[in-house]
Length: 371
Image (cartoon, rainbow, N blue to C red; front, side, top):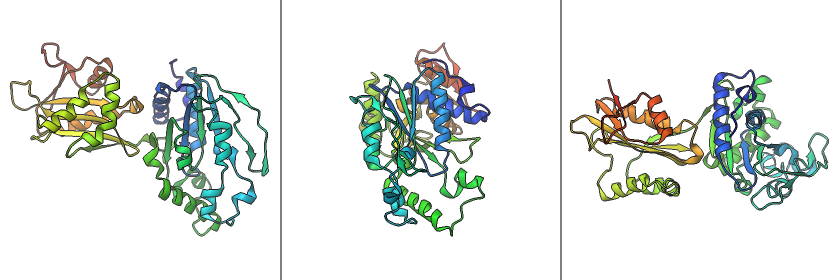
């Protein structure tokens, strides 16, 4: 992949925003698709979806990836259908606003694996309330579709996204409302939007289906939402998908982790020991363990074990977050942490977190003294 241009990512944006956009751009670019990679960007009205998609498009374009920009606003139903349940109906807002059958037929299906790659970006002008005849275009192989809009994690749309992003912003704090003085709860027209999106959340729980969840409440400091939790009990069911993914990469570390837990050889239940998982959008995307170092000949030495992050969550800070949690848990229980790795990316990660090389030991490559 060509080098990302930080200037293209978000000229004038904060350093934190530029850094997050660069991370997301690298993560998206690392994904492979047979023809076109389809990325959906979801969130409430005023969450900043279009701005985020445009900034991400600039970053990807600067790196040499062809980008197709489109959005759900180009696929509205006519006014007569949108308001057939009443102009103030929340259910009408959710169920009748958009023509999903046409969206699939002219854009999403042609850009799906095996599709014709001949697509149209728009079929309707909502302001004029009339159909438009956008020209048919042909996608280049390796192109990335960036599609923004509300309700993108409805059941009939989920399967189309190779990557989906949910921008977390509360409706009452949406950026459009903030710019105009805030949401007015007694306003019946606002109730249509507020309750319609609440109904979508209740039925579809988009944050549980998204590939990435990004808190975009503070435009100057957006951040990826991943939580680190200690696993209690068997990791088998929780880590099944990661085990399969790691084995496809030729790695046996997670299969060994599950087998050792099942046999009782290592359950991360001793004093100071722990097994942590990273979660994004309701799925385990990474794991890392802390155990008593069986290779050490002295007490009080812990070992970092089985660090693995799924491909879709790499370059997003998940591995660093897991190791930081291990270091935090080790303090007070161990006076030293040790590990062994030959992976160059892992070496960079560990040394960036304060581990130092230990070339003198056969069973260790890096150590950290804990205060």
